[in-house]
Image (cartoon, rainbow, N blue to C red; front, side, top):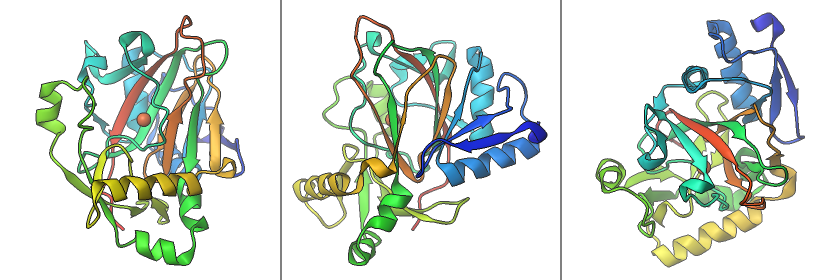
Length: 271
Ligand SMILES: [Fe+2]
């Protein structure tokens, strides 16, 4: 399979299309390794025209790491709970705030994998921002400051739709550095989730929120954002170790937008 693998950048800062891989079939070891490196290099990978059952999709996603349980368990597929559904008709709101996934875990997901099952006729894109480039663009002094800071993460206290069983399992606070080194690529990136970070160590919750909001404002510029406009059959792999992402809720809610989501375990973030 490795002979047919082609990786073509989609944007000057991040994102690449991968051709020559049929994810419905087993992926051999050399292709897995090449895809892992491509993810570290390009931070978002797009596979087009995939036709996958839930079980095939889960197997394909596990190319990027061991699948993890997702903490909004009410949205997981009943017979295949490692696959979550993103669908507004389930009562979910599109996640429009920039974030990286599941920072309340000790070993947060290395990657989030999304599969476009039903796509609205307009809008509903997913954007991914290169937080490695964001880190590099910060003034030297602020990079040094960020390298000394950590966030304390837990499940959002304000959310009413979190099940008690998920709170019991995933609710304890976890500390993560605000700058992390990518275990494959070796580069540093800014790392935080503004609504899961209850506070930054040594700062009040209000000051922490204000500082994170200011960072997002200053860091996330169009030059470092790849906006993925979904086609049915796309698989989008997002490297959570060096990016943030958001959904765009700018689509007609009478239309359906269904994505299947798998998250796969990564390393414990370290500076
Ligand atoms: Fe997300």
